[in-house]
Image: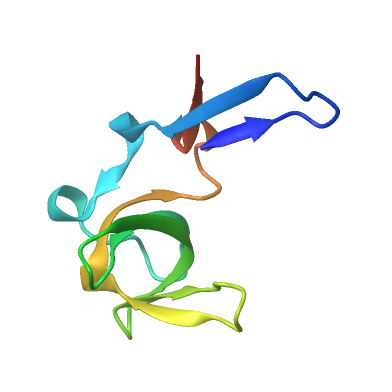
Length: 96
């Protein structure tokens, strides 16, 4: 992901996901009910993508707002997650 600072036309910053602090579902399991997370999930086509979602343990799914009024993401498609509010350093890191 490339980002530019406002007003700077030539300086670009590259970000990547720092996976060292993430919770992999196959190792840790799913988050607690009601927990909001940054998610990495696998689409039905086999591609990987990411989004924010809130976990619903009773439904075993995440509520994810794609800007179209929200959608439900089945928990079995989630590969990894990190608590959205617990450790901000776990989400992304700037690389040169």
